[in-house]
Length: 64
Image (cartoon, rainbow, N blue to C red; front, side):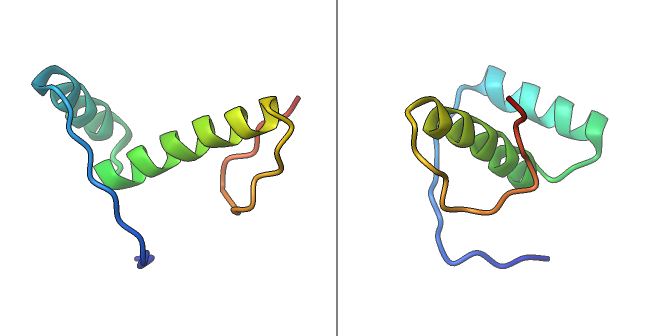
């Protein structure tokens, strides 16, 4: 298990929470891992769109 030194908390509706639980069950992944990867994908795409070079390593690599 990877230990991260930075933490953020978010609030979500019950509908989003229920959907998150369902998809994580389908993929058999931890909710925090799913959220982390989803955030990385969006952040990577947004940074590239704005001409910024992401400064983090990720398992996700978007091909253009």
